[in-house]
Length: 171
Ligand code: OFO
Image 1 (cartoon, rainbow, N blue to C red):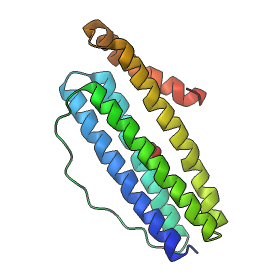
Image 2: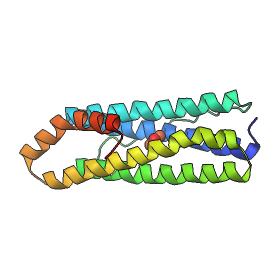
Image 3: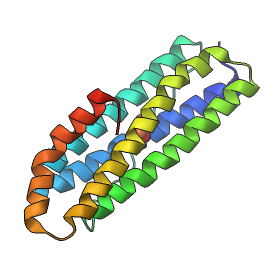
């Protein structure tokens, strides 16, 4: 059974995961319309992953005797000013989510909820990977700068870079 404090924190996190999924979906769709197929593929996948993170939390809250709250969908931006901006936003967002997850871990310790603490360790590692990934993509984008040919290659290679990074578990 989760305490009220832990349940509230988990429900807040469900909202953040849902918001991440929607935000990345908006970015993916925008990239698609800009002809950046690789970037779109990468971001569609990120969006799906965030939805999976949300579902995992929903199921956990319900399993532990709480009640998962399904958040409302907020309207998302239709346009983004550049691809650099998109990935800066991704990094900023992931850093924010990591902080929130750490807060939740602290709440679990205070509440002596070691089961939820253990459950959250998966999210802690996931955030390390996602922040590292966003930094790696931003570094590559810095190398590309305004070079159109470089952008073509970046877009072409991004989905495979992302898959390799995820499966090797390192930066
Ligand atoms: Fe849900 O992993 Fe990032 O935000």
